[in-house]
Image (cartoon, rainbow, N blue to C red):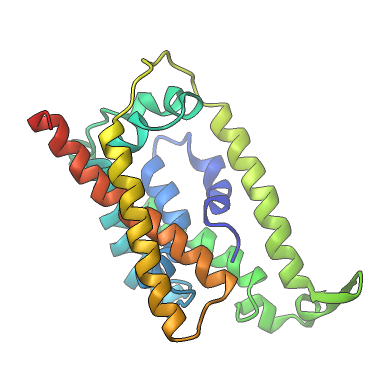
Length: 244
């Protein structure tokens, strides 16, 4: 699969539109891959289909918008390197609940648009994708050194690199603000402990089932980071509130 963050590049042109939601677009552009992360396995049955955009991507995307803003956002921003924190600090205290109450339809539309860009992108870069199945050209194998790869596979990796480059360029262009040099070290300790715990536990099950492949390892690592971020975000909120 193209690296999940690279998919954000497909919605960058829409991010400065007042009639769309930045959170909805970004979450929507990545959410089809969250079926992998929720399963902690490189398997997707619903999220990369047109029906799945509405039956899986939209409800799960809405859930993760709330999880990010209410649970993870402050932990992520406060513990990010200065180059990231200085650009994200402007969103730290954004009132998501009030925003969603007033613009819930815009959020929904934005998630759907983001999800569609992901599904269309993947339909050109996955062996089971619609356009790959429709056009022989995308299945043509191209010689590369002593082996060969199908065109769709080459597109997958090229689009990942190009998409990631566009995302980085866009992120660097965001307004830079002065930030204090501080972090929630307790939250970071929890994050890394949980990361190791989630990763080791899932990998143990994969090893027992003899299913360890590089794709699975990558998905499990990202999923472990996601779950660890949620747990750490909860701990971080409590530690701030109760001075732990």
